[in-house]
Image (cartoon, rainbow, N blue to C red; front, side, top):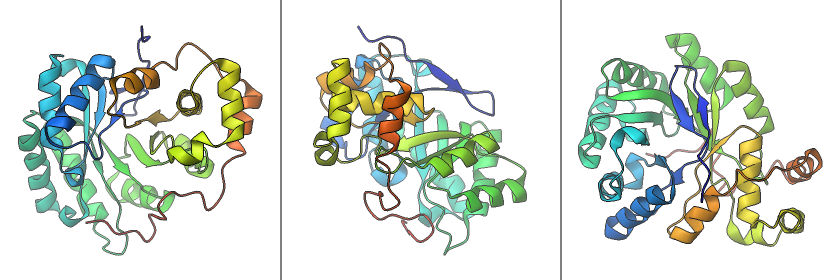
Length: 280
């Protein structure tokens, strides 16, 4: 039996489960089934994006699950090609039509694209979308401290959350400290890193053996204990249940320190630096 998933409070008064289901690469009927099985395994936070091209499958998976919409938190994200205000407003509406949902619980700007320099305008669109009830909470993804500071200064509105690459090999300590100072919740994409790298890591393997847990469970527990909301992706009902079974043990300070020591400056998985990465 999976224990109830704790929730965190965001700076706008909304809440969010501390772990959710990532859906990148979950498409069509198989994708809808994976989302439905994840919800039935116990997930209540479902993460998608316009550029994942699966908002329809996610919406169908929600309907197949039989779980009431008001028990779920659904996230989507704005692509770079729609950063101008008018295009952003249409994209949000289009995402809702695709998913056949009346609102998103959380909506993020997917990447800042600083070379294009339109992310402040995109943020203003999200602010208005929240006022109009299209989304309950608004945040960003892959924003560096300078991007966060700028949108806060120019609009007066602080994101509720920033979703960033965060895993044992790239633990984003400085970024997390900035989030804490600004009152922004950290969320982790690719929280378990690449399977082949994690599974062959002796440090995490030894910790997993000591707790009689899987390596993935140890990493997700570490994510929880550093205060980050994780969104692991899995299509297997068994693995989905395993990834939720992280609330019946605790990592010691020395174990947390050992995992923290695995981080390295070049630890990004895909060389996607938000200062230069462009994704439209």
